[in-house]
Length: 346
Ligand code: CP3
Image (cartoon, rainbow, N blue to C red; front, side, top):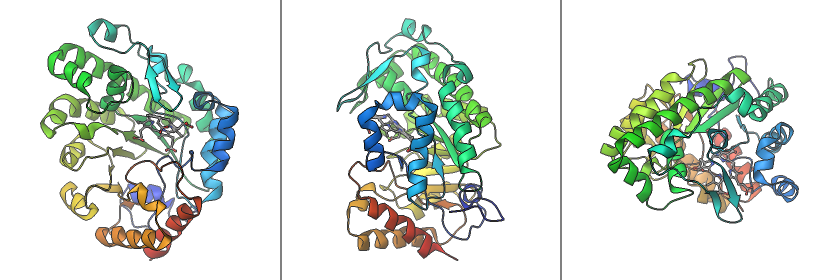
C-alpha cells in the first residue's frame, strides 16, 4: 500500500498515530511458500542468497511485488552476525543451523569477536541501500536482528533446542561466562542495528523467538538487562518492534526492556495483552500462521475477531504470531491482506 500524505501507515501505527486502515506485513514474508523463492533456492544455498546484495534485494522485493503489504523486511537471518563473531555454522539439509564449535565456557566466550558490521556484513548494508531505492514512495523497509537470549541459545546449544538445558546450565551455573557472553552479543547487536539504520532501514524488529522458554523471574534476572541494553543503545530515529513467541507471561517484562511495539503470538488474547502492556505502546501480531491453511471464510472470521479485540485503537500492526509456514497457499495470503485492509478501513 502506498505512502499517504501523512506518511506510511506502518510507520504511523508504530508511533500509535491513527491510520486510514490497519497496516499488515508477515514475518518470513519472503520464503518457501513462494514459488519464485523456491526457484532461486534451486540455484543458490540459503547463505549464498543472504550474502549477495543483489539476491537479498530481489528476494526482499518478491512479496512486495506480489501482495499489497504495508512493509518490506530485509531478507537475511538472525544468525548472520554470528559468523564474523567467530561462530561458524552451516544449514544442514532438513536440520536447520548446526554450529561445529559451540560456546560452553569462559574461554569460548573470550575468543568471540565484536564485529565491525559495515565491513564484515557489508553485503547486508549494501542490500539495504539497493532496496531502499527500489521501495521509495511504496513501503518502508524493516531491518532486524535476533535478541541476545535467542542468539546465545544457538551459540551454546549448537543449533535448535527443545529444552535449553545447556543454555540454562551456563545461565544458572556459570554466571560469569553467561554475563560475558550476553555483554558481547549485546555490543555486537547495538553496532549491527545502528549500522542497518545508517544504511537506510526505517524500522527494526528484535526477534527473541525462544525467550518464552524462560520463567518470568529468570527472564528478568538473566535476559531483560541485556535486551534493554540493546534497545537503549539503538538510535531512536526509527521505531523498534520487540517480539517473542510464547511471551504471554513475559509481556510486562518485555515492555520494561523496551520497544515502541510489542509483538505477540496467538497463544494470548491480543485485547488482554494490550490492556496489560498499556495503551502507550503499540502491538503487533496475533494470527496463528496455521489459520492461513484454512478456508478463506476462516481467515476472514479470524481477521474480524482480532480487529474486534483491538477496538480500532491506533497502534495495531496486523501480522502472524510467528513466521509464515512453508506450503501456505499463496492465494490465502492475498485474501488475508485484503480482509485486513477491507475490514479495518475507516
Ligand atoms: O521475515 C522475513 O521474511 C525476513 C527473513 C528472515 C529469515 N529468518 C529467513 C529465513 C527472518 C527475519 C528470519 C529470522 C530467524 N531466523 C529467526 C527468528 C524468527 C523466528 O522464526 O522465530 C530464527 C530463529 C532464525 C534461524 C533460522 N533460520 C532457522 C532455525 C532456520 C531453519 C529452519 C527453517 O525455518 O528453515 C532458518 C532458515 C531460514 N531463515 C529460511 C528463511 C527464508 C529458510 C531457508 C531455506 O531453506 O530456504
